[in-house]
Length: 96
Image (tube, rainbow, N blue to C red; front, side, top):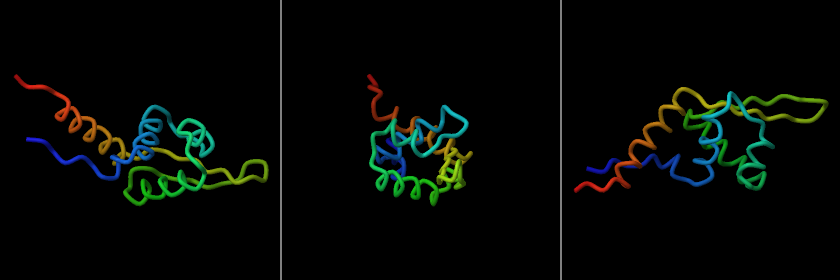
């Protein structure tokens, strides 16, 4: 039986962000923007959705008088990603 895929992670941009964050300790907004090729506005909205779901933590600070947004995956985000991958594998496995 197929399990439902997490609708938060099923978005291409949100999945890309979580995939990047799972492999690093933390990432700055500009790094995520560069790697995903997303617009600032779209990335900001999607980061907020991930934060509201409890999948990431966002820290806002200043570096050399410029705003700095740093993102980090949470334990809930790691678990959600692992479950998403596990459930997705059920869709692509061919059982004979």
